[in-house]
Image (cartoon, rainbow, N blue to C red; front, side, top):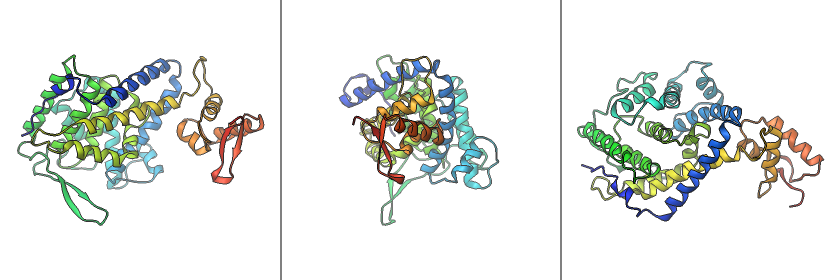
Length: 350
């Protein structure tokens, strides 16, 4: 049986890179907090966009997909799910909403974890919603030739309730230790949850919901405005490599959490960095959409396309971006490079 012990986090022996990226995250968090009152409308718009992206990406990681149009309709409640995939998507929507709105009253405990699973699986009608697995399960991977093999043997079904209890108690003990950086603790707990793999289905999605829950409870809410799940999906190869590396020797208590901690921190840093990009202009009491587009272009280190700008500023319409770019060209602020879909914009003096 695995021994859940996070005391190694208070000995200062982790690689310097982890502490460096943690420091950057704290700085970007402070910056985002300073902007919330000033730009509340922008944060509200970003939260609505991120919700759709989170539901789409977390399900896409598991191969559960539908069209972008249907994702928007399901997430925004304008349409009921029409098939099994859409029922799964609607379930994640509801569980995500629970984390977003009720995280203050939730905790990392078995009751709330089981309830979150029940919410996520109920719409699809699974009989095992909100219940731990009854049979042993293996994590299977498939190579480029289509050959499958067991990548990891999770905790047995018989031992799962006890190991989940030990995980919760170990987390609560570490949470109360003032010498442990809570931000570094979260990925260790998530890795252990994934190694237990307590549910018959939905473990990956629940792990992402629990990541958000623990981040929110520790004051890191970038995932509400920039989809944490989308950033994981963007780095899926790195994510699974780190998970595999850090789970080696887990059953024998010889695994090294560092790779997964670093990947988790990199993903969170990407969220805060993307959030920072939404506010390219700082210093005035009101930042217009035009000013944000202008600053995004003028601050770009390399030629930037309209599509790049729309991705950085998803709350600003493509029509507005195009109008601002046209005005900037006419005013001589920027020049166009390339034609058609290859068109980029760069400062005139570059």
